[in-house]
Image 1 (cartoon, rainbow, N blue to C red):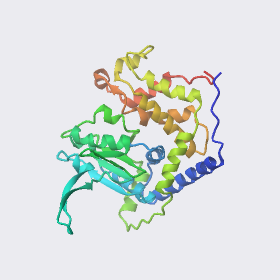
Image 2: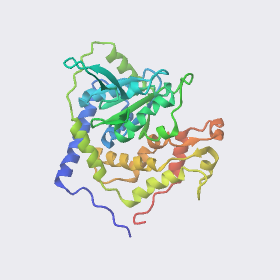
Image 3: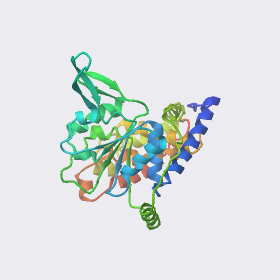
Image 4: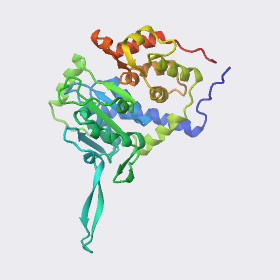
Length: 342
């Protein structure tokens, strides 16, 4: 029998978990002053922040992708930076560069580093697929290591640090699909869809009148860093860990026990990073729901945003118009929950 890990026992951790839940409620309440509906999207952005990941946001123009992330930065009182990705954007336009400056006192010239827009707490990479891979890759080190290297010198980025990248799914001309290696570094693939009629009506009503939105800063950047550390300290039962790993391993073709529909429609399945983000996201989801135990349902609830950009469909799936979300639905039906103690 495998022993199950104990839940949070420290009084400080329990108090911090209470602050996390209260902070989340206050953040969402402040967001609602400007953002109408999109509860699932807002929830996934909150989990991204509490885990300390980066997320990709997919949606057609006009669905407030930029507004959502900018509002999060305003509510959290974090430094926000928006980078508009274009075909002529250079890596140095993101990271910064060394410039020659003259000392007014001595007259001597020296190289001075001028930080780029990546030096912020929340960075919005707008239409990231509109710039070539060389420039896209300038984000890789920042997203993974929270630092950048320019001319052989390394500069740390201030914590907390997040990258949210947007893509427009209906424009393909003049775009550069993100390499799988870079896609894998995003925790979630968050899809923003059209709102129901009553919510869309409220959006039009609220945005065509006088606007004076003032936000109360619900939590600080230091709070977020503390919440991220708490998420990692929350234990997870072995059966739940095994379930996350089984989901990810079953998504891969050409493996022992591969499911027929995976073999038929999938070229490449998810990497181990998918299992890591499933577990981290599940921990944050449990804490947000005022729980100190992680369940199978937490894993299932995050399977779509975690896996939809990590499962690469083949030609047969494309020709039969099989969506990645459909494959994930089938995967969730096919993979059983391990029994406790296995």
